[in-house]
Image (cartoon, rainbow, N blue to C red; front, side):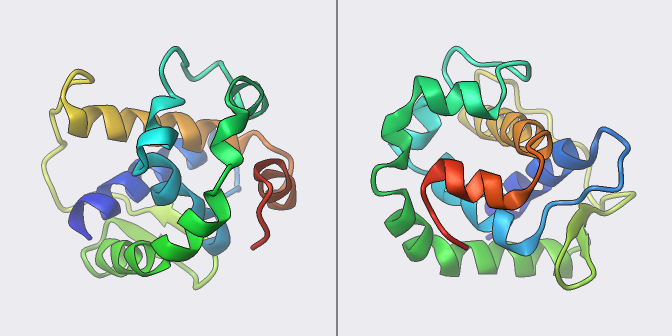
Amino acid sequence: PAFGALVLHAFCSAFTSDGGQSKPSYPILFLVLPILFSRKGIATFAGTNVTTGFFEWLERHPELKLGLAENIRSGIPYTKAALRFAVRHHLLRTDGYEYSPAPNAPWKQYKWSASDERGHFLNCAKRLGSWVAKVPNETTVFHALGVHP
């Protein structure tokens, strides 16, 4: 749960970094870990950057959608545990539906480089958070991925 909480924190930080009022919703967070913690999912981030964008990324990797719904269903307990950990340890704040990174997180900033596997996961989480934040609404995100909340 601890590393999953860090990944969700990275996702939420990037999602909210534009300074807008938008925050990721509870259902959106259930996409993050199943995408990033699968070999197929994490491999789709190779050759991308923050400017790639959600729809271009999906267009390059339509294989990501295969089995994603099942991965999300089987990942529910892990995402819930990571969310509980993140809220309990003041990494994320929530109003019960939307999540945002807590100001003054209670740890020293992690120093993993992008070449370290942990740093790679966190960088990909930030990229995904940035991309999803730019999609007009969460229904479009779920529809584009071929899953339903």
